Length: 297
Image (cartoon, rainbow, N blue to C red; front, side, top):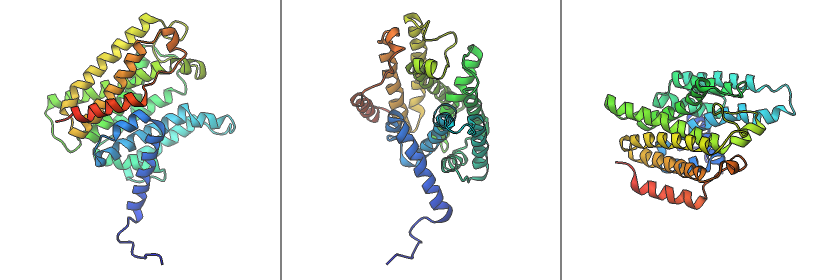
């Protein structure tokens, strides 16, 4: 016999939001082993917001770089430019109304409303996503604009989730903001280095100004590695100010990408343009364990 008493179970909007959150969680753990593992260190009430943020930006990236473009090869009527524009419009609607028929955007809209993510840091993200549909080579200005929108503001979104119910001085808030921006930038640049060959050969795209697989050499590599190390150091400065579980996760993420950056530094430039660098699962778990034991207040 089916239990007809639904008072003990979520119904209506509560149930829908719960399902939306599950869909967001599935995205992060399907696409990113490293990021997914790091989020495990965050307390559940905050973790769900990070899952929602990641899911939104991951789906947007898929529209401009992944599955939508692949689907368009067999369905020419599918236009990634229209899809990303529609996704952006629906995202703002979810933020305004607290509801979307798109489960991932419903989860993100709920998070944005709860932690104070506003359009001023979401719009630059979509602006950068749309750049991927038209920009194949960047100069210094367009590169800075792209990295800010595609990665740095994502760091700010996560920071909002970490500290939305906390109080900080003006100086502390500045350190936190600078750390979030630096961490987002470092993550993005490491990924650019890991994907240098694939971006150039498959997408016809070169992110670093003046850098391509043809002229990528040891001097260029070490200059980029040094820049990433500097940004990771700036991100580490903010860790002591974060709530304990968030500090653990951010420390883990910093050290995971620092490990990747070190491995990039130790790989010949000629090899780097042919091989995607990764960190072993064993190394990842050691970093996670050390972060769990050694971060936070």
